[in-house]
Length: 127
Image (cartoon, rainbow, N blue to C red; front, side):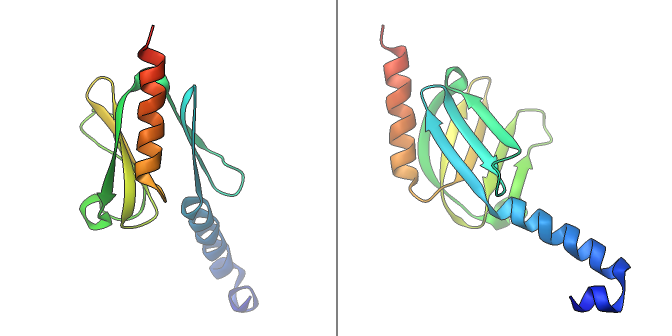
């Protein structure tokens, strides 16, 4: 409010940054028979979808944000489709994907998430 009272040109960038922080800090991680969906922000948009057919395996891991250059959504620049979705240094799940790609996402209970994804993969592969 002080920024608006002082100068509107100070307030606008602050509001944009606050909105971006709100979007990045909220993420919903969902697993179902179709795959994994990660939605951002209060409305779950934008979304990252990983079809079950692209997932090779899942395993719990730990993310140290200093190794990735901070929190947020990261992609590799080597063209290998690697990514990270994180809100800080914390437990995470690592999804090994087809074509030597992977996705790491911080979650509250990575052991349960990894077990659920692997169970769905076993069920899908069983004739």
